[in-house]
Length: 503
Image (cartoon, rainbow, N blue to C red; front, side, top):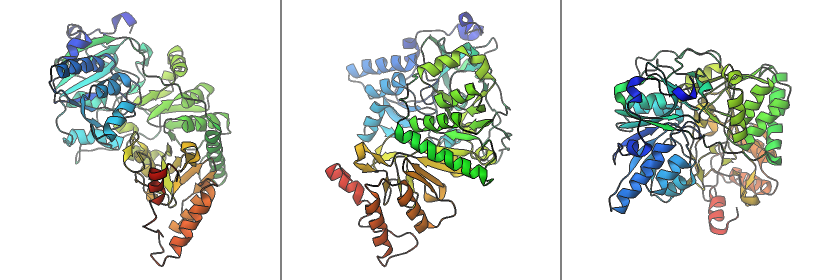
């Protein structure tokens, strides 16, 4: 498809209009499903025009708010713009925008944090209410009305299927070479009509290359020419490199013990500097012919595909720096043969994750001495971003790894605490905890042995004596000995930080 002919369907070419005119078709009070996943493939123009529309209403003293559903996080042009004008009533299932975060933590915006694999089936079941409008970015539209997906798929299939009306943004800024990279499965169903998901290896294809939408649903087509958010990640610091080193040594040991094959198992990795440090280590390490089955493909995995260390990768979205995005565009034919982009109910499907035996590697805010993990809330009450897909992979993967530096806020906070202030992943779903101090393998260990391993191997030396003291006094308290705690002190570290700024 050439850049001059992105909209080849005659019916839909008649519905081309400005972003402002399209935004005027979205009334207050509706539920709007928008494309977008980790800053990729989100609509750029209509949300900004809608924000201006909302601002005009507010200038007249009229309230105007909508609920926004996406795949995951988007960008300032969507979340930021709508949050800035107080235009979001409720947001789901994941966000990372600072203005959104502030509104949520001030109680001015409702937010539903939910496992990403659950979103589509909950929408199908009507748990969120009726989806009124979908706003979806695509690369182009074929002659027969099929939609070429953009740099993320996320929940786009579900939003198009469920919405009464659809607005399309055709983005000339996305590479036409993305056509053919996607695999959209139209065989999902609700119980009792479900069938097995037919994936036995990460790069297996079994769906369609296009999204399907009845032309009569489409009320507007808007042409844009804008890049994705494309945030540049900072280079891995010393702590990130040390965390990666501990993890790579662990993988080598598992291969030697024949618990992992020589090319490991399919990799899942969260987004961020630690994840990129792990990918960089793997790219330089001894493991070859690796595969990935993950949510997001970021710079590190693209480098591994380029070097040949990573043979195939499956995801639902990209999350690339400007340089990596240019590399993708310049060599799209090479990457299209090695990358599959799927809907997120398939990229995060528990059945598939369990079958393939995924190595799940995700970040966290804090872990307690027994292995419970908080990955979403600062000091137990203030949302950071959301759980995303970490729970989908942690509970169902072959290995469940959580990583973080051992301290935060310049050393004033220990990320290893007596009891986490909020639980996202219970001790039952956490197998490996890694900080720059070391790696604690918790598999096969009862609670008190888990505590000793985490304290000695993962806690920072400045906090280790206090954690030992807490644990020893809890063991000698005369209370239950299965998971010893001092309830009057369990959250005292967090309380101390709130009072003094130091744990």
